Structures are given as structure tokens and as C-alpha cells.
Length: 277
Image (cartoon, rainbow, N blue to C red):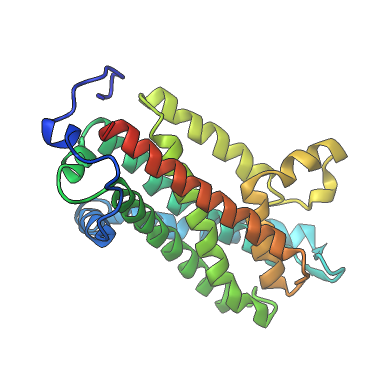
């Protein structure tokens, strides 16, 4: 399939591949190839993503925070506005890094570079490609998150030892968004359709209790916000960095784990459908 959405015949070597051959155990080759390409062409884009949440924190958390004062945490304590929005920016950084790699990069590889056709003509299976690409997106999202977590620690915004678990938490966030993002991207056939992803992500970023507590929204809107994956991510990370940990965080973990699993299944099936059926 080309960028114009016109179906084309797959190479004979790809069409003759056994449908049951889903995984060859070599996803690392896909990830290594993507990592080398990123180092040689996109490293400036990657670096810019590290600084974006820092700028938000400086302008809003510290600048605007001097006027806002304190915000009530989940356990009833008053915390600074910077400590309130920092974990939300941390979760968002993990999401952005993962989504960029699993959507726009994957879109180009599917519709223009036709990279996966060549990969699947070898011993690699669609699960190798899915795991490799999602792992690469996970690496990028994790790098963004680690860098910002270090900044949070340096300025004293990690208020509890529970913050040590924020790192595996944001990796789960990146995995959930990367796996689902790649599956959704496989349906996109044009740049105009890809804009739908940005159209969804921006309101989700603004509404997921990132800058305001959930309680400021009307009850009906609160229900919608609580269904958003970024809200689940923000609440999980915020609970850990502020120390407001309850058994309820297990729901957030389950939500993201299910999202990651469904995304992996969707991505594998779509790659198989696009290039092997």
C-alpha cells in the first residue's frame, strides 16, 4: 500500500511466507536498526523532547506556581503547584516520546519507505517487527522520562521514596502508548489522517488533570477524563512522586497493562494482515 492509499501487490517472497510464522526471536535486530537510524538522522529531535517538559515546569510550575500557591494532594496534604504538575509532565514526556516513534516514524516506514516488506521477506515475523519497533519507542519514552525525573529530583519535587517506582511506572506508560499507537498508525493512509492523532493528544494532555485537579471539572466531564489513558498515567505517577499511595494505584497499573497487551495484539495482527495475508 502506498502513501496515496492505493493497494499494491506484495513481493512474491512476502506473499509466500507461512502465515503461522509470527516470531523468529530476533526483535533486537529491528530495534538496533531503528536505533542506528535515529542516531544518524533524528538525534536533535530526540534531544528537543527532553527539554520540552522542563520548559513547561519552569514556566508554569515555578513561574505560575508562585501565584497559585499550594494544591491539595491525594492524601489531603498541601503541596506546591510545581510538585503537582511535575509528575503529570513526567507521564506526558513518556507518552510523547513513545507516541512519536510509534506513529509518525512507523507511518513513514509503512507507507513510504516500505521497510517492513523487506523485513518480513527475511526470517523476521510480524511479532519481531512489532516488538522491535515498540521497544525502540519504549526506549525513547523512557529516556525522556529518566531525564525529567532527574530534574525533578534535583529541584526537590520528588516528595517520597515511592518516587523510585516512578521509573518503572513511566516505562509502563510508554509501553502502553507505544503498542497502541503503532497499531492505530497501521490504519492511517495519509498525512491528513495522521493529524487525527495530534487532534486527540492535545486535548488529552490539557484535560487529564495535568494542570488542574480533577475536582474542578463538572461530574460528567470527570467521568470522561477518568477513562483517558493519560489520566490513568498521571494519577499513577503523581501518587508515587507525592507519596499519596493507596491500593487504588493497582487499577491504574492494570489499565495500562491491558492497554499495552491489546496494543501489541492489534499491532501484530495488523502487520500480518498488511504484509502477509
